[in-house]
Image 1: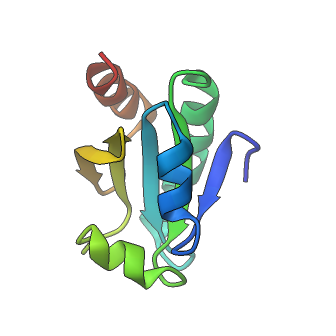
Image 2: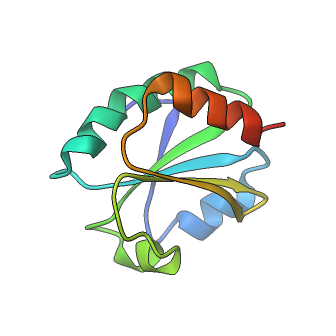
Length: 109
């Protein structure tokens, strides 16, 4: 995983969200999920392209079920954009990089 992507867990989720002044894009994923694996390189590029404007985090739903339940994540991959700790936008399923970029540019304005 890229140095630009933060690993989130049930234990550190609230602390990481609370300390971050930038919007946070959280990828709810699992290792067995094919579309999640396809999304990984897209998120690597997004983390690089939006560095300094957005933080990208990944949360494994199998290992961190409490946070997944808290945000009603029913399908993966699910991407949620948080601003000031509150959910702003939710994207479910694989999306190409250009679409993710457009959605992020809209959400960050």
